[in-house]
Image 1 (cartoon, helix red, strand yellow):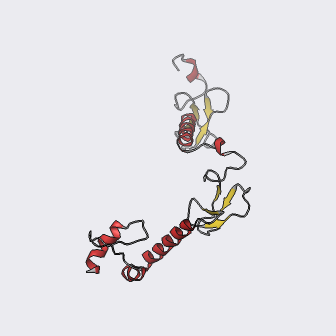
Image 2 (cartoon, helix red, strand yellow; image 1 turned 30 degrees about the horizontal axis):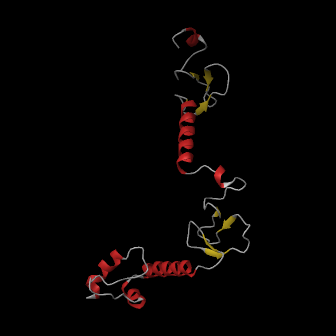
Length: 180
């Protein structure tokens, strides 16, 4: 019986540490020993880690803080320390203890761009940069105009290009036509 119904128990318990019987009238739970016999070793390790994390959270230990990126937890001795330093070799991230964001010291939490603001600024900067960059039609070298006239010289191959219309040009005759 346990071989047939256990997959259903697993699917209902996804992300949890307890495995309750799926029979509506049964209040029973699967023991950790039985679960260990039915799960593959990688899942057993993951389950044991999750049980450990849950037990630590429920213990409500004073000064205990968890890394926002991994299960690592430590008791913080200095309450004035603004940085949480994760010592998990697979993580090693430094985060702000107040806002749980990546370390932003010396900026205050309210000075740090977050989420949508940051993504919008990056989006605009990338598009403005893309609009300013030109690509040489001969060698595909990228460059942009810093100052001066619209006659650009590719630093890689020496080709002359109009910055405005991006056409290959000779000399300054291209610029005498007022339509450009």
